[in-house]
Length: 269
Image 1 (tube, one colour):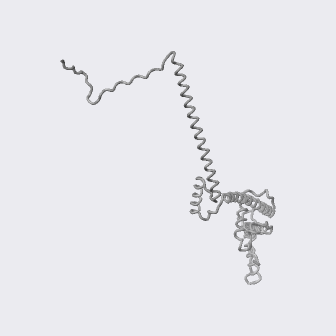
Image 2 (cartoon, helix red, strand yellow):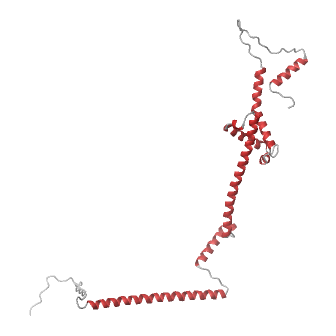
């Protein structure tokens, strides 16, 4: 008996080589094609039936669940219980947290908030209307003052420049602020368009800058004139200051009065 011959390429121990899987049998060709089509249609029909059955089942479950919820609500209504939805529960938690943070706003409702918004809008509109009204009033007051100043100066309102009108506006406001409370209710007089207030301001305004000019002119006119240098054929007689007899008390008194008046002094002030 002969010994067996060893395999020249033995497989590793413990790792037997698996047998190859058989290839899938291809779909039959020829006279079997009709049979496969019938099977395919049958499978499709079964899948559709299964899908329809599942949809019907889900629909029935939803109907049963809705009926159950309705029954629960009726029972709770009979028992005097009003269950809340998940959204309502969340809203209530937020409302309680807000009330704890801002207790003075806890009682505000949506209607209250809307009313506050409307009131804010109305307040803004009222302020704009009020501002426009007082602006118009002030422009009318300044127009009356411009007319009085132009009349005092012997001109027309159109002769006043924008710079002069702006100066009058500033001075008028300062005049009201300086005298209000000290000499009376000047703001109230302005709001009432008191014409005596306009006359009072115009007289004070013109006096502030006309009086220094008058004094300067008066001083120039009554002051001693500088004598011109004399020369042959062109000598001009000049008049010197009036001599005062200091031994005459009346002459001294008259000279003092004349000097006082010439420098802008007034009696009775």
